[in-house]
Length: 330
Image (cartoon, rainbow, N blue to C red; front, side):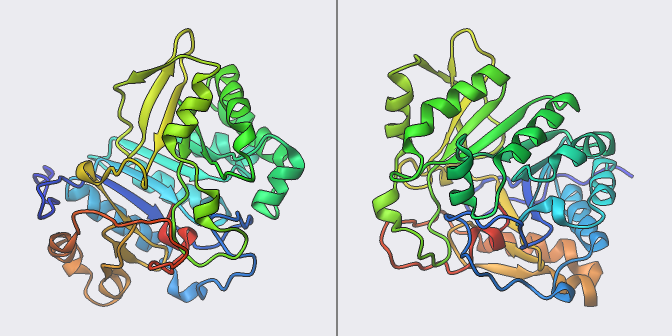
């Protein structure tokens, strides 16, 4: 059957063609900017099943979504992930299927994910120093993640991208080292300003904040950065360095608000349609899926009319959005 014309347009005329789909709120790391050290996770019966996640994905594709990114928590700790990837990859109309991971299980999962139809992977990497990496993630093994990156390279993904959150007193001194690693390995890298989601006690967000402009200045002392017009369909704005294929991206929710071009929504692992990263408007898709599944697509279309114009992040210690980034879906 022919696909319907795109129906997901918000009140500000923005076409929504990108879905970030969380498959779990659980993670085997406890990154200091993302989660508390002691977490209470969702009961498993409140998390969408693999079949329900696939149903949500297909509904969005039928409504004009062309890109889906699978997120968590850590998505690769979820059982039957390959089944979900294969189901979404085979859905007509989807142009790009991606995944964001901490890399801890990628060594053994990269090749099967590629075979199932996954096209691109983003891998979180905030430090190249083993002890510091463990401090930032509280549980992570840097060498395990580096082996996962190598496995993903060998699996033949078109482009691999690193994501790094830089904190003033934690890893600011590693910015150039991370760029060097990306350039030497032929990887893209994006630097992300810390998102003020969830209440954390490990550090003060205002004291740790580093702007994208500051990072560009630091990198610029070693490399000449030139703006690159590439768009990944997300919020990153890219730069390039002559002689290297890598793209250097910056995601700047504080210093360079990107809401005017927002083209995405999120679905949490419990089935909440989150219309904005920095606002609480949501729709309970789980209730619809389990009671009136035929109403799923009309409900999504209606909910889009509540999408706000922009978020209002600030650097004060008061947190208005109490859900952690891991519960938001990457």
